[in-house]
Image (cartoon, rainbow, N blue to C red; front, side):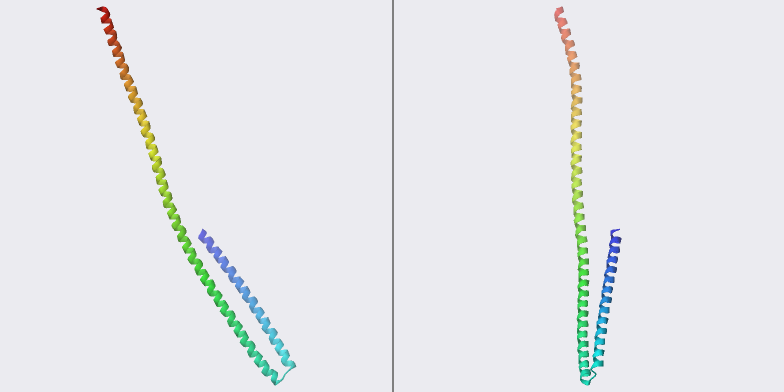
Amino acid sequence: AAQRLQTAVRRRLALRKFHSKRHAAIVIQAGWAQCCARKRHRRLQAAVKFIAPRYLRRLARLRLAVQQDAARRIQSRWRKHCDQQRRDDRHAAATQIQKVYRVRWYRKRFVARCFVAAGIQALWRRHCDAERYCTRVRLATSLQAAWRGWICRRELEKKHESAVAVQLAWRTLRIQR
């Protein structure tokens, strides 16, 4: 479910990024087209007002300079775009590497904690078993002691009764003599 959610979020973010870049490109293209149209219109007006060979030569030089400047600007922007694209690609790759590393690190940490938890649980069970065993031994010992005490008291009672009977017989015999 988390992976599906992440996929949907990434898809939505990529689509949003695409639309924003597309919108920015359209705005840039419209601005550039307006700029070019305005420049072209101004040049045509100037040509209409001052049609002269010198001006035409100058216009040709200006056109060349503008074209060269535009070419420089376009090349510069293209290089910037390519550099930005490379940076974005590197950033995406670095993010992916970090993600894989973090997943492995957290998984390793989780497995280690599970191992430690299992050890602690085993120790706790061993402790509880030892306490249970000690309790049973204590109970068995006290039960055995109670049983032996009862047996001893019963035998002592029988011996006491026998001794009383012997003493009674002895006293009776002594008195009769």
